[in-house]
Amino acid sequence: MEIINRKAKFDYFIEEEYEAGIVLTGTEIKSVRNGHCNIKDSYGIVRNHEVFLLNMYIGQYREGNIFNHSETRSRKLLLHKKEIKKLEQAIDTQGLTLVPLKVYFKDNILKVLLGVCRGKKNYDKRESMKERDMKRDVEKNLKRY
Image (cartoon, rainbow, N blue to C red; front, top):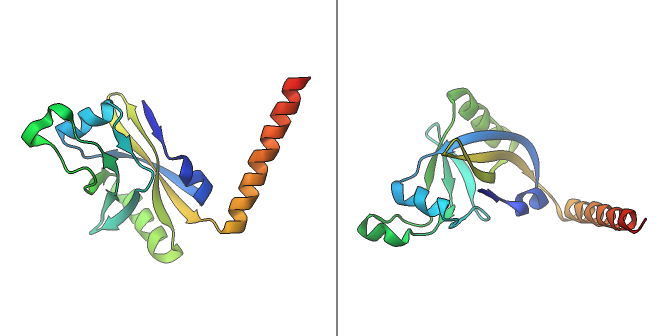
């Protein structure tokens, strides 16, 4: 099961990608396995030399009763110390943003593909829309012949 942030590629230039583990509770992982997860509006921050993912929505697990979790709490990401230093430097000096691109399972462990991104301007978004339209037209014309 994969959850992809399609809006990220439209809104940002992705400069680097990092694979990170995520710290979850028992009801959160069960809810993600059921597909109740959304990373559309989430972003990452570095606080006290630790990386956190904010606004990631994980719906409540129905059978969780009193042990259920808060749906949009901040979740800690697991990265190496060198990677965290690189991220911290990129965010502080270059003004980049941490955006989750994809959430997926790797050997029954939930991973987050975290992108170091630069925001696009409106004219950049128009160019990417033109490219997408041209690709669609080319594919349509190839199917005809």
